[in-house]
Image (tube, rainbow over all chains, first blue to last red; front, side, top):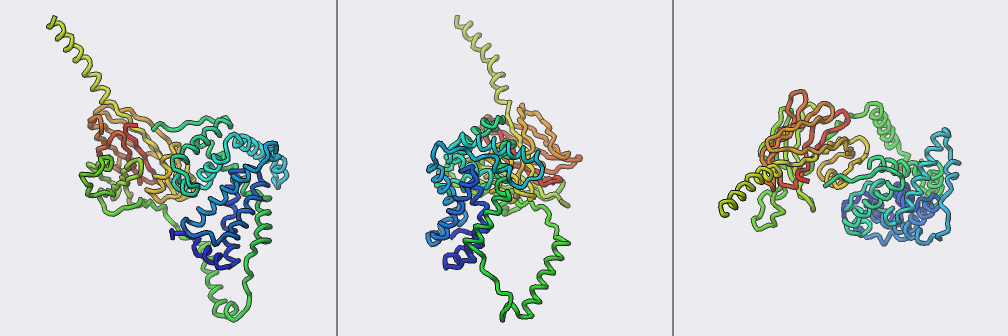
Length: 185
Length: 138
Length: 147
């Protein structure tokens, strides 16, 4: 089995230790949510998917054989669940209301306004790329995975990962009105 | 690309650290996967020796928090084996593919500021040579 | 007729050889300056291809690109490049065979040699120089030859 820092907790969870599950999910909830949100760009849907993923992992923990690290397996389950959720969406569904964000506990209205504007711009820009592209983007830019790790997680070729990230960044920069260029090589 | 990178990271960071998201997380975890309760008393946890050890550990942690140990930035290049040039393929096979031959060869390496090391690593697409100095007093 | 033809060919050769040599003498080196540290986990590199290389070669948690310069060098030429916090890179193109070069690269600060190296590098080829300390981490230079 690979050098997996979660090995002990996973083995305890597989033998039915609920405290081990609690510790694992508390450790990885934010990671799962961030990846789901990176693909889905909607809070409520991301929360639903996150909870579904953790419940699924709890139910299917015996299916984890240790061929990869637990975290890699969790990334894969999360990305697949998120992409499935996108596919189930109806086309007519509106994008999440920015007002939901403003209702949260922010004190400075100027900061709230700029955060809301950023959120709206980013959501609109991300809708211009596919869920598969958003998945590699969040794994690379937020989770800081290498191309090889992303390729291993999503069972893609490293070249496919690279080209998806390049395309996603370029499309995002264009949608946000940011100048983008790769260094000559 | 840095601007794009920062915008994206801030966007996700703001969402993940949102109070509403945090509250939903706590509610879900407490409901579905509550932590197992730790007994406050009992033959083991309540033993005076254990309590004494626990207090001692907490005191040590408090001391370390007030007087943290300084960790200097460590420059720790990977795979150093000797003080001079190291290659992942020290005795290349003449029959080997030409692309496996060293693309960079060090003719000279030195420093007035401390010991130096050079090493090479073959990646799938390129061979990279690293020359490194460990400045004294750094 | 034959004499005229021979003279023309010789004249053409005399005109072409210097320009061919000139093309061979010009060599491009791209120098990327990176600040590596264990403060945080920022990873900001314009050329993303180096992310994996850096994480496999070194054990820092953060790599931030500070600047990138392109140097076009003639044979025998030395170019100086101001780096961060008073460090300076001096690059000399000593030989150019067309498929490889020999270059001398020296990092100095306050008249002290931090790294003085001479290497033979293929075209294209890459080498890293690093170790000089900065206020926020350590300096790593990525030098790309012939790209």
